[in-house]
Length: 196
Image: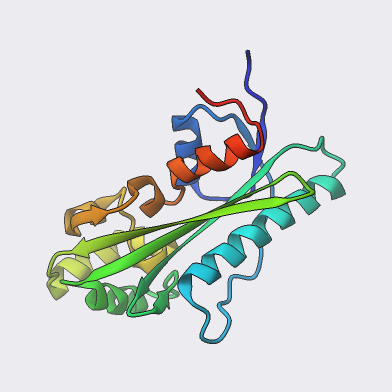
């Protein structure tokens, strides 16, 4: 039996790859929202709020475009260090400063995934601990020069060149790279989506 398509409200190529990994066919839909954190907003509430908002925005887009009603999946990932949200860097200098903060320390990577059918939204948050090695200024500058950090929360991508900085991960590797597959499968199951 062919699996039904869902809508993916995300521009992330990593999320697309992860959905393919578990055999979920999808079409892309616009789910862009303002990603500004609220004052003193905890990281876990921030990612959940954004994932829910992106799922709702995606569902609104499909209604506005007259597309068939299907599940809309959205996600948001952030990095938190000492309860401070470290978003995507605006400049190379900002990326270098963030990586210097993460150097030799443990931080949290939080990814929320939300699914909407238009009537309800279900959400789950994955929290992983990532332990970074001590990084020298030359290693940081060389990594930032690759351009890889510029569209990534916390200024790095665990699935890319920054993997060499990660001593260990406690939690979900797929969550660290943008879509926690265990939680995603659990949520899809709650909506009756057929998975093995």
